[in-house]
Image (tube, rainbow, N blue to C red; front, top):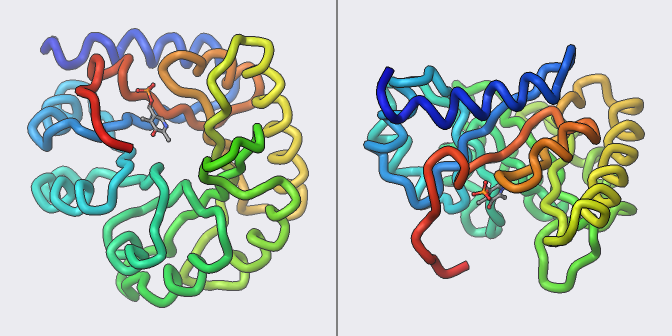
Length: 226
Ligand SMILES: *Cc1c(COP(=O)(O)O)cnc(C)c1O
């Protein structure tokens, strides 16, 4: 077994133990990691789903790794002027937080690709200057997405404010409630994306169906501008 595989094996086991009978997907967050590092992890572990924060960075990696058939998720903020490239590059976009993004993504989704899977990002702790819509905007966004045949509404994503396990637990519990309400309205909604390296077990305890993990898989990232 190659050395790129061991952290992911441990994390997969932790996820499986916490998930019990449920299925929880691991999204490997590969921002700042080279195409070679991604290739090594995919080869050593069979990992298919990768999360990127920047459209430009993902365009290059996807091109370099095209032979692997990976599934690419945008988890960073999406600027309106990047909708075309995002719709061409990603299989999932987890950061939909305003209705302005919906029509351009639908228009630019290439006709030969499956519909683009979307998650609505919720600013669950109502943080200033943080991406994500407020909970009362979810319904309108869901309606707008569901009206577009080239897009597929799949669920919700959140990045809670840093905090102790009790404040994080409150945020995750609030997301779980919002997710249940949304899933009751839309049968195609099956994904609740929350939990990162430091808190993914707590997120799974509150119903996360996808966890997004970078540092615990690849090691610490070099400092970068936001
Ligand atoms: C970077 C990032 C992650 C992964 O964070 P780690 O703490 O490295 O696991 C998850 N989600 C989003 C939105 C991120 O930007």
